[in-house]
Image (cartoon, rainbow, N blue to C red):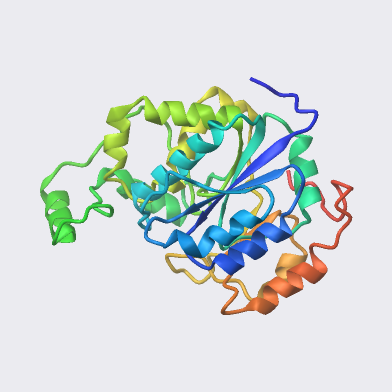
Length: 306
């Protein structure tokens, strides 16, 4: 493994499906000489609305676009394909950082960069360590049952229901302990670790065929592979994301100005989800109060969360 990066570059992979102006604002706030941005636009979304981003420095649109369905293997597959495209570049990235187009930084780009630069070879993911959590109670059904999320056949959910009634429980094809959680979709991992994950999945056709009929694979597959590998020793259970599930819905709360005090005091690097159309004021508040720290000092206003 390569651990020394005198000048480390970081690739930010952003999964987007709407709101190109909000995405543009995210990229502008994270502008840094050592950051590259790779944007995957859902194939359901016309690419023309995002092409203006190419006018920005160090911004690229992923070529191998995929049609992504919420909860489907298609979303995880899009992440993996995009990772492969990034790693195929003749650029030695220290990390790949996965974001959505509705994320926003809580710290200046320089603070984020310096933090990771000082920790080469490490991985920053999330998994729910408490097996009494709600996520764990639902975890087994993600792979023990058939999920036809990505299929386009008529009455697919009727067929899914009947199949699950009359078929035995599915067994995960690898003898691995499961790691995951509601916040596990988003992470920052080393390029070496990313290559390992890609190889582990792309060389196992049986695993790929199994995952096609799972649900929410982005919340457990990549973390499970990492934590059952030699990369476990370089992995921290902290992905630096603030995500609020307090509303008890299938998606996290859209953060607004009422959440600012909590965000202002937070030591994490990113937060989600935001909607610039619903509440632009919260992004203005973050710009004014959170992103004006001294970006030259990696510890400025940032107690180490680890």
